[in-house]
Length: 142
Image (cartoon, rainbow, N blue to C red; front, side, top):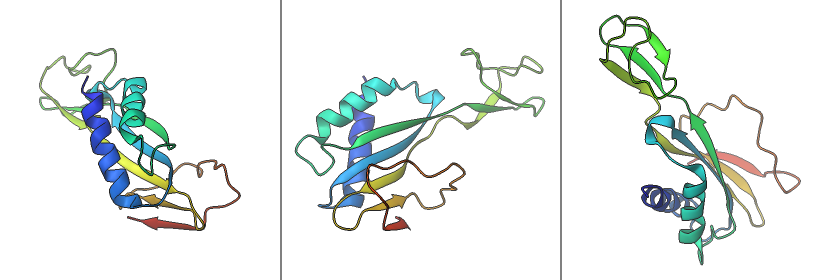
């Protein structure tokens, strides 16, 4: 179960950001080519986070589809049905453009001054996450 190793890395990043502050939520972007079972990743994260400031944190896993570029014809496509080849020309020579990543996108910290810390370079294109509290005091880049 490689999810446990991934959970360990996610927790290390999270605690590095949080220090001693309570962690409410961690948002992680996981590429399809990682073949991660979200339930197993969450289980590993919860198990490893026991006794840390992230013990009660919610882990949100955002799936990232695999995008491929054909080395033979240059066509770009999304990987579908586990087929790792070019749907345009049939070549098996493809390059992954996305789908291999595992990124901690956001860490929501609690306490007297709640804040959401986002990964540098993260473009937020979706509405803000709903929170259990009235407002988030500061939104900063880590």
